[in-house]
Amino acid sequence: MKLTVKVCLAFALLFALPAAAGADQWDRFDRIERMRMRNEIRREVREAVRRARRDSYDYRRDALREARRTVVEARRQMRRAMREAYRRDWGRPL
Image (cartoon, rainbow, N blue to C red; front, side, top):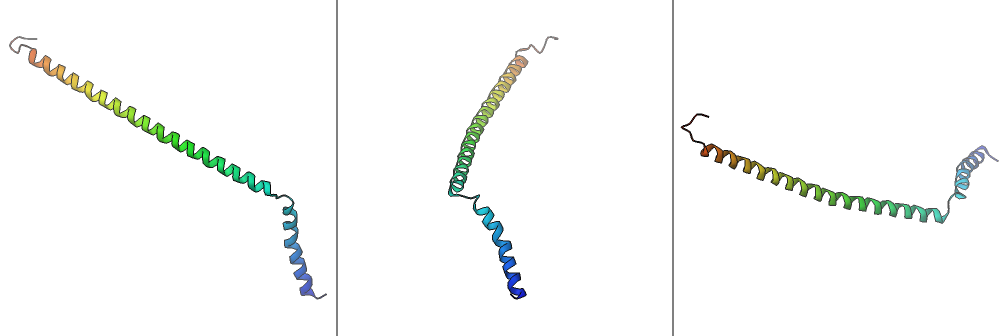
C-alpha cells in the first residue's frame, strides 16, 4: 500500500473509533428523557414566573395600601395640629 492510503486509513480509523465507542452509550430513551427533563424545567420556570408576578402584585398592592394609610394619618395629624392651633386663646400666655 502506498503511504497516502495508509495515512487516509489511519485518519478514518482515528475518526471512526470514538464514534463507534460513543454509539453504544446512546439510545432513543436518552432523547426521550432529555425531552422530559426539558419540559419539566420549562414547567417549573413558568410556575416560578407566575408566582413572582402574583407576589409582585401583592407586594405592590400592600405598599400602596400602606402609603395611603400613611397619607391619611399625616392628614389627620395636620388637622389636629391646625385645630389645636386655632383653638388656643392667643391672648393668654402658655
